[in-house]
Image (cartoon, rainbow, N blue to C red; front, side):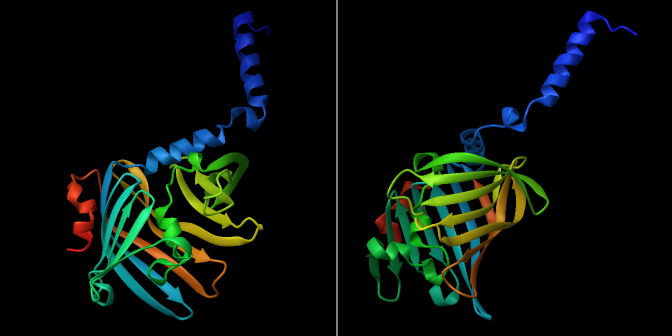
Amino acid sequence: MRLPKTLASVLALALLGAALPLAAQEPTAEVILAKVDANMSFKTIRYAARMEIVIGGESRTKAMEAVAEGADKAYIEFTNPEDRGTRYLKLGKDLWMYFPKEADTVKISGHLLKEGMMGSDLSYEDALESKDFSKTYTATLKGRETVEGRDCWVVELAAKLATAPYDRRRLWIDGERWITLKEEMYARSGKLLKTSRVLELRKIGGRWFPVRTELVSALRKNTKTLFYMDKVEFDPALEPRQFTMAALTR
């Protein structure tokens, strides 16, 4: 049976599209990162969280309440008994810590930025870093792999600024929910420094958001840090005075 010319042309185009290599149908690494950034971005946020620090067979939990405005302003106050009243204030690239017992304020800078916050695997440098990777890294799409049963884009980031905390990063990005499910962070020597994994996601305000994450340092043996986001509120109204030195030392 001879097909009509129009129908035959449509079928030919469909078959040609199916035969195109996957690379021709893939989004660019920049587009993928932009989608992740759009999913994770917020004007303001308020949350209550816990940080479980596991060292050897022992663990200790730090509880906190925090607010943030974009990527440049954040205020964190610890509420667990042994750290109650310890506070952090982030303003752009600057970070201060307030010690309630000594009524003392310290600016975290220099080599201290490499230290773990409250003894965790999260460094102060990590906490200060903007998550807009396009400013600091060049992105390359490396293909697709499965992580925890999810189809992920694999994106590799190479530092284009000497101030980048890591020379190279490798991200596994869920292409349906636009969340980085796994990340590896490397030094200039090629040595693996840290690995992070999202253990639980929750849909909040129409978006998927990580509420349980694991961070493991490759430089410290038998340690890991677990983050639990217990309460999350996007775009609450915040007072500008919450991001001031007066609020930090009150």
